[in-house]
Length: 282
Image (cartoon, rainbow, N blue to C red):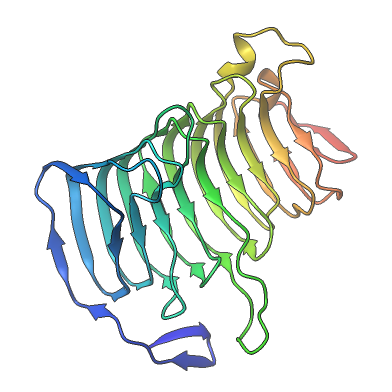
């Protein structure tokens, strides 16, 4: 059984009560490793190194889950897809589970590190933990959730998820949240816009709470002129009621942009608190 809301329980079929131990070592994937729908399942693979061989597609895909614990080692790719994608099917959403990894390693700024994908079903009340993401086009990507579809209940949601990452770097965009159905994310991240014209954090979501350790090497070591498009933070149109606590002070790094179109977002640092039309010395 799974719930779309507190008043509705829907039946489904999935694996349950499984525990899998992946022995330490190097594993070469000739295709996508898919973890099917599961409830109260555990995967321990922290000592494993997964090498995704194809140049297209996703390396590891997690489908629906409820009260699961999945712990992966390092996933290495040279693909236009994702190293790790959470994408539930219509059979079952992804809820109340923990997904962790020791590393997501890309090459030549291709593909995505972690993709939290609600384009088919919801991904909510999850926790994502990682220690190293580098070398992708996008380090963590949260695309627009599924829009409302006639004959189906509600619309897609990506909400109340927790993210903890110790270092995201060498990506064109370290973190990118889109807008539709995305809200109430809590982020504890160390991000560095470390290559030319990269972005540390980009969001158009709602009600996010951010704790950011910030760097922007792509700004610091290159000429600071109109040709340097490196940015610390971009609030895209529609972003609202986000609170970002940034250290060191954001003014020490690449410029940040507020394109949200409203004055409900707040960026706090040890020097100033800013939103549109507001600058208060602390």
